[in-house]
Amino acid sequence: MSAASADRPNILLILTDQHRLDAMGCYPHSQGRVQTPNLDRLAETGTLFETAYTVCPLCTPARASVMTGHFPHRHGMTCNSDNVPGNIASALHELTDRPGLLSRTLGRAGYACGYTGKWHIGTEGGQLFDGTTVASLPRDFGFVGHNCPGHGSGGWRFADYKAYLQANGLSYTRRREPGTHYGAAIFDGPDEAHISHYLASYTVDMIDRLAGGDGPWFLWHNFWGPHSPAVAPERWVRHYQAMDWQPWASFADCRPDDLAWQTRRASDEPDWQSWARTIPYYYAFASFIDEQIGRILDHLEARGLAENTLVLFSADHGEYLGAHGGLRDKGRGHYEEIARIPMIVRTPASLVPDASLRQGRRLGQLASNVDLYATVADAAGADVAEVHPHGLSLLEPIRNPAAAWRDDVFMECFGTGHLPQTAFTGRCERYKYGFTFGGRDELYDLAEDPHELCNRIDDPALADVRREMIQRTARWMETTDYHPHGVRDFRLARIGC
Image (cartoon, rainbow, N blue to C red; front, side, top):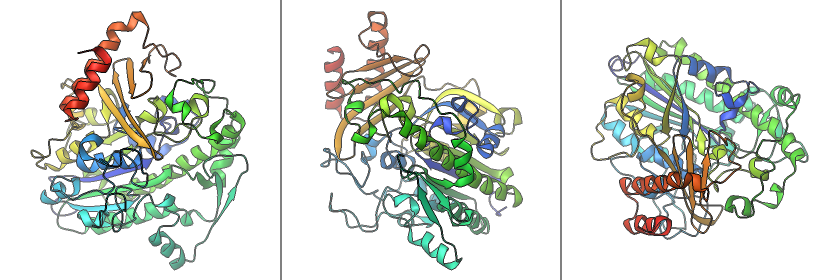
C-alpha cells in the first residue's frame, strides 16, 4: 500500500464498451445464461445498482461525461468524435483541457492518475471538423499510461498492442463465421495475444507502478469490448453456441413511425437466424472480458491493495443486438437495451466502515454514469465546488440507505452515424418517456410492459403521467443548463406552456 493511501482510498474505475445488462450473470436479465463469475464476485462484495442509465447511448458523449461530470449538452461533445452529424457547428470533437476535468481535479487532490485502453474523446492532433490542432489524449490531461487516439478500431491496431505482440512473439488469426453481424470471429491464438488480455496485463503492471508512489492513485481501465468486433476464444464461443437462442421478446416489434427503426441498416432487416449466429460471439466476448477483470481483481488482493481500493465497474452504454425488429449497435431510440448500463461499486472500509452496508447489497436508486465523476471526487475528498457536477455521489445511498436521492434520471442523444437528432429520455418510477424531435413521443409502463412494445403516449389513462414526465424533462433541462430557448420551445411544443 502506498504511504499516503491509508487515509484515502486508491480508486479503480473499470469501464466496458457497449455492455448489455443481460451479459452479466449478477443481473437478472441474463436469466442464468451468461457466465461472469468475477463481476458476480464484485457484486457480492460490493453494491449493485439495479437501475442505472447512460447519459447518452454513444461512446464519446458518455466518456466525456465521466471526465467532466456534465451531461453532453453542457460539455459539448454531443456525438462520436469520428462522426459528422448535422449539429457539427456546435459539437466539440476534442476534449478541451480545463481545471475541472476529473484527472485535473484528482491531481490537485494528490492522486496519481493512470489510463488504460480505449479513449475516444480526442486525437493526436485535432480533427478537420472544428480546426482543433491541440492534442487531446490521456497524457495531455495528467494521466500516465496509454495514449490511443480516436476510437482505436477495437484496439486491434493500437501501436502499443502490436509492439507487445512482437516483443513477446505472440500472434493470432480470426476465423469469421458467415452470416453473422459485428465481425463475429473465433480468436485463434493464446489468450495472452488477445487485446483484452493485453489490456488487463497492462493495468496489472500499472497498479504496481502507481502503488510504488508516495500517494493514492486513480486508475481508469477501459476495455474495447464487448463492442464489435466480437472476437472471442473458441471455448467461450462453443459454450454459447450450444444454447438455444430464441428471438427476443421485442424481435417482432416493427414500427414504421419509430425513428430508430427507420434508420436501421439494410442488414438489420428482421432475420433471427443471423442474430442467433451472432449472439454467442457477443456473450463469449463478455465472458472473456470477465476473466480479465478477474485477473485485475486478483492482483489487487495479492498485493494487499483490495482492502483500501474503491472499485467501480460500469459501461458507456448498452447494445441492441437485434432487439426491436433487428436493430443493431446503439444511438437512436429510447429502448432499455441501449439505455440501461451495469453499475457496481465496491467500497473499502475507509469509506463505509459498516460491512453490512457495503457488501452484497442491491440498491434500487436511479443511477447514471454521470455519477461516476461525483463518486470518484467524493471518495478522493476532492474539491468540486467550481465544477458543479450534474451527477451525485453513489457513496451517499451506500452509506445511508435513508439518504435523499433523485427520483428521475435522464439520457440524451444528438446524433450518430453522421445523422443529426435531438432526443431526451426520462425514467421515473415505473414509467419512461421519450422525446425525439421530428418523431412521435413515447411513453412506456415498464412494470406492465418491460419490453417496450406498447407506446401509451396517447392513452387517456396515462394523460397525467405524460404531462408529469414532460414537466420533469423540462426541469432536468433547466437544472443542467440546457439552452433556455430549447427548454422554452420544448415546453411549448409538448404542453403549450
